[in-house]
Image (tube, rainbow, N blue to C red):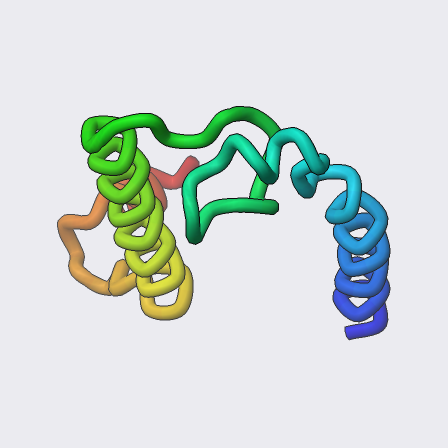
Length: 92
């Protein structure tokens, strides 16, 4: 438990150090569209295709995150025809 706590503290410190460097500068804030200013450097999305790509990528990432947490918590590897059980029964 101490190792996990130590890793979380180190991650929080590293994220806190890197976050101000990742935010947009004054020039980039002026060039970005409303609602997305001060997020990152660069001009930001310029058309509806950019927004479609950005939101669809976000949905894919959220679905992947959900499924990975779901299968990490309850992997359901109890069936006898699962690949893990086939290998374990061979005696390797």
